[in-house]
Image 1: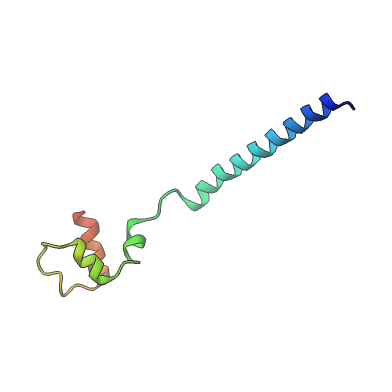
Image 2: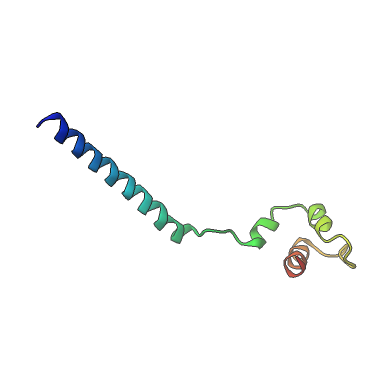
Length: 76
């Protein structure tokens, strides 16, 4: 084979690899999901951070973390 046909074949191989990787990335979105749930993100925060988010609301001092997360999701 000559140089022109070798370079053409290499370009097609590289484009094929890029398309395959792009397709695999798109398909992985269906398995992993695009966004995380709000609850899982908020559960990583401390109670003090959650209380700061709910500043101005009454009766939050007695709530546990799950209750605080529920209020943040409900009101924000």
